[in-house]
Amino acid sequence: MGIISIEHSDRLFWLGRYSERVYTTLIRFADRFDSMIELGDAEYKEFCARQEIPDIYSSVADFARRYCFDDEDPNSIVSNLTRAYDNAIVLREEIGSATLSYIQMAVYAMNKAKVSEVPLLELQHVRDNIVAFWGIVDDSVDDEHVRSIIKLGKRVERIDLYARMHIDINEMKREIVKLNRRIERTGLNFSRKRLAHINYLIEEDELDYEGLVQEIEALVE
Image (cartoon, rainbow, N blue to C red):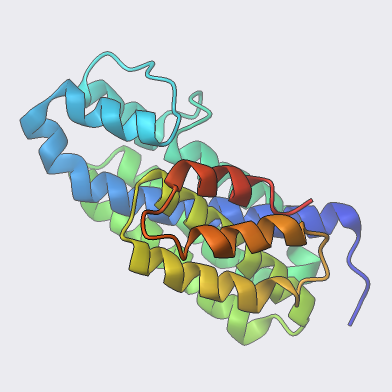
């Protein structure tokens, strides 16, 4: 096992976070797209508020187009996919060319969706390639620390997004159990105090979602 630099450890962590952000936000966007069309501005505004995305959009149609495909919008799905790709390129030696190729294919699928008459269908291929990327990380990346750091980033981002979206507490518990199993394997510095508080919060009768967001965002030091 080689030594992973601090810079590359950080990039691995954020590769996990950005790939998860693309995956989960695509799912939630697709799930709520019809209701956005039916209910109008209030629905997409709530979506933005939950994720602390500035409402810079003029309408539902403007949101749907720019949130998915606007390279100039730092909160867009395509911008987060680009960040995942940029990290993956730098990490080619750690993750391998075959693993990188699935992030590249997700980018190709995103570009195809941007010009498609049925973008939601094409965006499914972006999700499929992200899932394939996670699968080949397990299958092809030999270094356990590399795998664990990517997976920790993925888990941190999922908990963060799920908390912002007020996902069912049982699903939150499932993700936090996985977080506890993974974090020690990474070799990264993290706050044990914050991890203990996360585990405390998830056992409360009424989950403090906002408190959970604050703790998970500051967990990895």
